Image 1 (cartoon, rainbow, N blue to C red):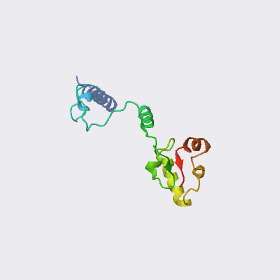
Image 2: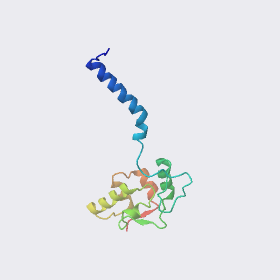
Image 3: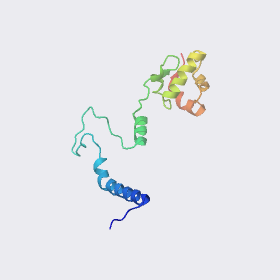
Image 4: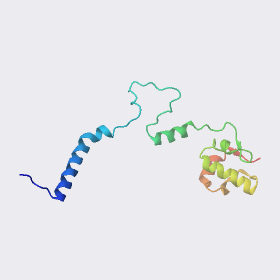
Length: 134
């Protein structure tokens, strides 16, 4: 005797078969097709980028590695890179100082730096021994 399955039963059986095949063969078919993973005994080369375990560590390392100026920085002549050597001045504030100087002319006194957005009295107190306005 031959039993005839309904359309719904045939579709359900086909989907069940596909699900079983996906479970069995999925990991084999979906494995990465790239180069083999590097063994643990890999010795880094000079061309390899340094691996930093956490971004927070790299930021604190950059703060420690930032060189302080050896002589006072002239805020009217210094470029953005020279301004970044000042304590508490990063790329954004250095750019703001340069843009303020271009828009309003040279600073008459070091305390004119307070007019730059982002530099308040606290930050200026940290800076005033490191800057001059010539």
